[in-house]
Image (cartoon, rainbow, N blue to C red; front, side, top):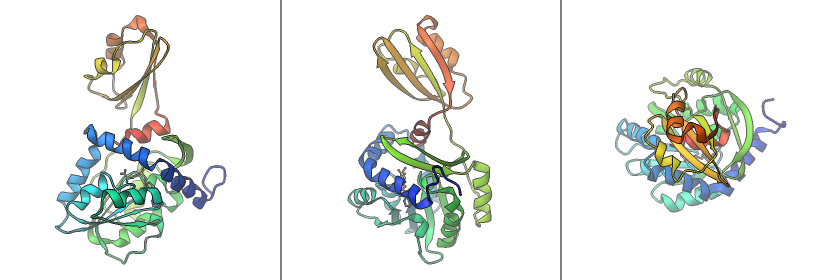
Amino acid sequence: MEGILHLTPMENKEIVREGYNTIASKYLEAREEAVREKRSEDLLLLQDLAQRLPKGAKVLDAGCGSGVPVTRFLSQSFKVIGVDFSDAQINLARQLVPEAQFICQDMIELVFPDNSFDAICSYYAIIHVPRQQHKSLMQNFCRMLKPSGLALLCMGSGNLAADIDVYLGTRMYWSHYDAATNIKMLEECGFQIVWRKFSKVAVLEVILRQSRADPAQELSHIQDIERITVSSDGPIQKLTIHVIPGAEVKEEVTRILGQSNIESLVMRDPTLEEAYLSILK
Ligand SMILES: C[S@@+](CC[C@H](N)C(=O)[O-])C[C@H]1O[C@@H](n2cnc3c(N)ncnc32)[C@H](O)[C@@H]1O
């Protein structure tokens, strides 16, 4: 059996459901902030999906959360059904996107008839489903889609059998296959891949001996930097800089911040929380 601490798929899902019940408002805040700052590349993808769909199309948003921004955007043009198993998320969604229909249910248990939807969209939710259930989930998506239907799915890109970590202050569970396994699985389930993108960040952590007034602003023009957070402990300042993997930014960062003021400068992989927060953009 896959999983950590020998938890069953049901127990792992309960961690996710309880987690999102706890952080529904906090997650919405983080999501809205990304959209406000126009960092939300996923909204551009939705526009692309929308352009490919017929007028009045029927769309399923699986793991819709509070419905913002994805269900809300889709509901402007289509008949949307949002599904999520967190009561708190569904309650928010019913308030925030009254024009859509919402169902509080585990997406693995959906029993819509064959050929029900023109499109199925799922953002950042499949990564919380125990991966031994991913194939049957995809088969069911395929069954519920019309023959020319489209799926826009956010799946994991690294091999992660199961992990439990803290996310936005609560306990959270993730599980997914690597990109190649996902592509193969989707094809076996009957999907043809039209488009795909691999999303990842690296983190450059810099500790400064003396605080600077606004180091994030000083570094903001560097092209391959996606996000900077600054924290201070007395005179020591820590910068957590999200960069595109493989980007050569160390030299420019050192030049701007001053070699003599840098206590340490280390490139590392993101923590799980950093990785998942970064893909919200
Ligand atoms: C990271 S949030 C994403 C919400 C929204 N799709 C978005 O783009 O912001 C993940 C959502 O998936 C839901 N979820 C996770 N596993 C689920 C499952 N098996 N069935 C239904 N919803 C699920 C969670 O409750 C949570 O609201």
